[in-house]
Image (tube, rainbow, N blue to C red; front, top):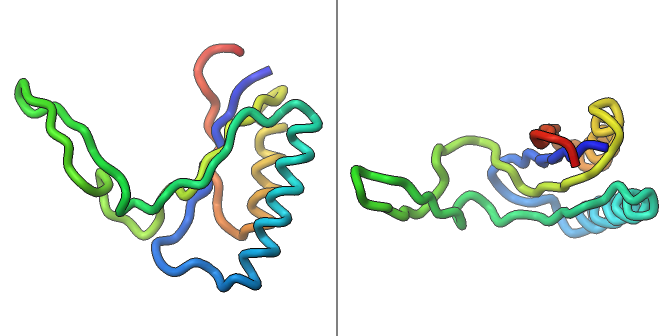
Length: 115
């Protein structure tokens, strides 16, 4: 089994209206419950927008923390899920379910090493 991070890519801007978001969240909850039943779910949470991020860098010998994302963009990672599945094909199938529900793209990235 391998661990995969599924990064949900969201556009910067307004969220969908509540009547749309409620249905999406209910469908996402169903996917999560199915992954938990298959013992494939490890962790998942939504993230605050990029305006809530802090960057920590090394400048010369000093560690400096600054507000905001590393780069500005039209999209950001809005949430992540960590799943444990057999292989990349299985991870892509899970990501496809999320994409169908949300309409948002997902990055699928394996962790290094074995579980």
